[in-house]
Image (tube, rainbow, N blue to C red; front, side, top):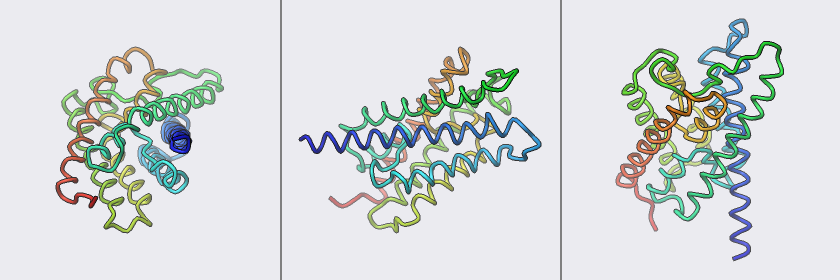
Length: 236
């Protein structure tokens, strides 16, 4: 029992660190680098940054915690028969706290420049807070579908019949593609922990729209888990 508890603690620390890096690296690229056109990073650079955070953490902590870094991923893996439901709540707690720590670190760095304004702080939104002015419905569909495809990629590349050597690379590239598609629509969430961490600092409008960036990714993840479990169930 003691060893099991220690193993869980190690997993939670890994998830905290991994989600911290996801937020600091991905959102940090948007807040610190994409804000300066002369650096040439733009949407494409931000998309690549998010993908790189997942790739690097997949190989750094994947063997410890599975490198979920995302409540929707944990829930989707559980629905797909790949994750113990007893660990879902602790994982989500570690992911949200890691994301908040990453956002807090980013805030300290970003606010160190004279004239700093919080602005959107890489938060997710729809309507007037969508980068491209997309509606609530467009944001909802985007987040459900993008999270669905993200989980299909994760469930497929980590299946027992798949070659797992390049799973981290495929998942990271998948997240990059998702960002290339959906940054203009919602600033790309597909991750409730990432959305929560930025909304806390962005303020009232972001907190008011946060519900969508929990509901939509979880719905997409559940659908993917159910469908992939039907397509390729793991043998007990």
